[in-house]
Image (cartoon, rainbow, N blue to C red; front, side, top):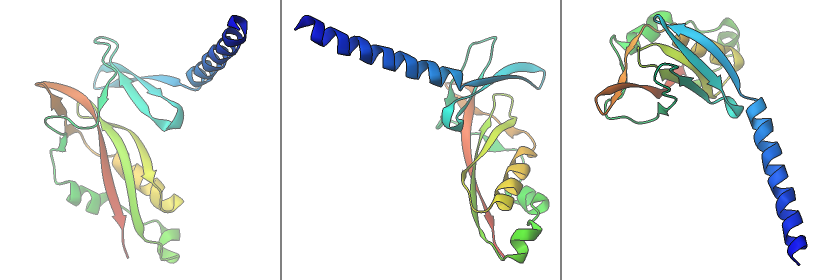
Amino acid sequence: MYKAVFIPALLMLNIITSSAQQNQDSITQKTRVVNGDTVIVETHPGGKKVITDPKTGQTQVFVYVEQMPEPGYDLYQFLTDNLVYPEDALKAKIEGRVNVKFIVTTTGDVTGAEVLKPVHPSLDKEALRVVSSMPKWKPGKQNGKTVNVYFTLPISFKL
């Protein structure tokens, strides 16, 4: 009886370990310099990005914080001035709202932009281009310290 329970448990442990190894293998790391600071950007399965500060070891990216990040400029004016309706979507009369998720780092840089709710490839690409070109934001704060924060921005394309 003891062997019958032990062998399946050992098999299950092997399967779990092998799955964890596969997930670990699919994590990619890139070192980037943001405002003179070197950070490590890890991309996890499913596209989740985590920024690690090698000096502090801080790897957490917050979703909600006491003081959310905010642009130091009129965001809607920036989008109006910089968003270009893609020609193919214009001709096909495609409209929609692209939800873009990105990280506002402790230095206020916008990084790791990804489309959460795609509409059309050219609209998605334009939304990512504009978000990636945004100037610095005022970083979010938690317990009085600046932290990395996820931010989701809906960008509407309307004819």
